[in-house]
Image 1 (cartoon, one colour):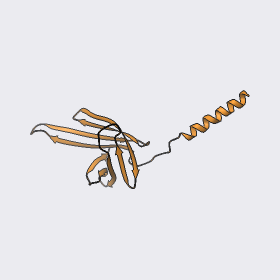
Image 2: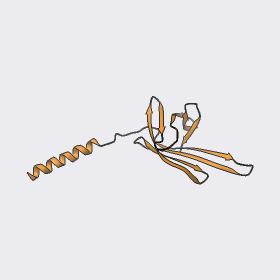
Image 3: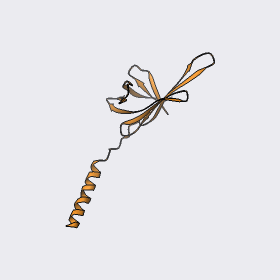
Image 4: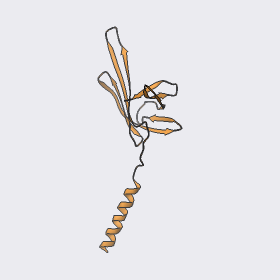
Length: 123
């Protein structure tokens, strides 16, 4: 009886572990995307604003926004891909969702919004 119970438990563990695998995601958006702006506060003072999106393969990511060397925002996001568009949402924040497309040029790969504005470049 012990052997039968052990066999049933082993088969149950194998079956459960096979059902929980996340399928491979090789989407080209996976990686780090950055936008950096230099704002002139005065004739001598400049301020750097850097935004960074880190996309991972389980349709999640991390967003950072730096003002100079100060981290202003650090939050997680979700992303999904449908019909050539990536939709980025920031659950639990007041940040608006973004809908972007990926463009490739000889100068590099970038994300642009629905209005054609460049959001970020691949790092």
